[in-house]
Each structure stands twice: as C-alpha cells, then as structure tokens.
Image (tube, rainbow, N blue to C red; front, side, top):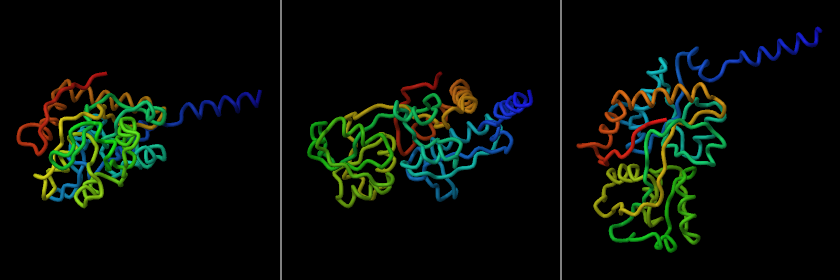
Length: 263
C-alpha cells in the first residue's frame, strides 16, 4: 500500500510539472530566438539599437497576446533548432521553414509567411535551373536551401557560410556564383550591396515553403497559444499591416501578399 502511495505521488508530481507555457507565464517573459542578419525578416537596426524586421514584429505580437515580455536572443541558422532543444530559447521566430524533417525535432506553428526560394547572381548569368550543374552557390549552413539545390543538381558546388551576410560577402568577392534563399531575404541583402546594380534575382523559382514559429517538441499548450496569436493577427488585420510595413509600397523589398494565416 505504501509503495502504491509513493508511486501515485510521483505520478501526480510529474503530471503537475510545469510546461513551457506555465514557465513563460510565471516569469512574465518569453525568450525568442531571432536573426540579426536576414533583412527584412530580422536584422540589427543601428538607429534603434536592437533587432527589427518582419519576424520581430510577429514576435512582439505573439508575446503581447500572451501577456508577457519578449526577450530576444540572436541565433545563427545552423543553431536555431539546437538552441530550442537545449532550452536556451522557448520560441524560434527566425525565418524557420517548415519541413517534414524538422517536424520530427520541433513543433511548428501555423505558417505566417510563404516564401519562394530563388537565386541572386550577376545580371544575365542565371537563366535556368540546368545551369546549377556548373555553378558554385552559397547557401547558409542550417537552412533548407542546400537540400533544395542538391535535389535539383547532383553536380552543384555548395558553399555554406554561417549566414546571409557572409554569403553575400562571398558573392561580392567572387567566391561563389550566386546565393540561394527566400526571395525577400535575397532582395533585402541585395539592397544593402554597394554595387547592387550589377546583380539580379531572376524569376526562376527553386522551391516554395512556409515559415513557422519553432516550439519545443511536445509543448502543445505553447503551440496553441502561438497559433491563437497568429490567427488573431490575421483576423484583426495586424498581419496585413506588418506585411505592408516590410513588403508594401515604400519598403526596401516590395512583394505582393499572396497568402493568409489560417489553421
């Protein structure tokens, strides 16, 4: 009988153990992994002295709807899932593309952006996917771009720098023929190059994917809270306002919005 009571007590303790949403609510803050070199999604804004971008606006909105303070930690592409699994962050809102492989490791929110993967190269150089067989292309380590490129071309030469800033530096220095990534990210980085007129992003899709918020595996209540916030942003019109801020008229990168956030 005594052993049974001990077992029941232990079971009750495990059931009562706080999950990530409880911890967030109790502390009054949520630690969010973000990017600081992937404009317009996430970049360091010198004028504000902090990170800004499309991802950051959604991170702030999600935290506000949960009634907590956002605390941002910058993460490299290759470190995003690792940081989440190790508990260094509680959410990843850092241009994290949803994929079947990644869904084995983390939970994803509903998609809050639909991205077309393309390639930036010198004007007139890239005219078709078959050219990838003879090209050296930069794709940041830890992104999905390398896998897409390998699927398209068995002989492509890949260079995998730490982030897009290093990838565009390699492109500028002639260490690669092009940089692969989401169209918006490519255009955002291209806009910052001194000799941007020499480059272009041809309308040649490489892949299409949805970006989602990354959440630790099994944290269903936190996933639900994030989904509620994202759907609320769509229903209230805030999602469209955030999109227009970063991709609408007057923005450095202008792209039409072709999706809505839904469950």
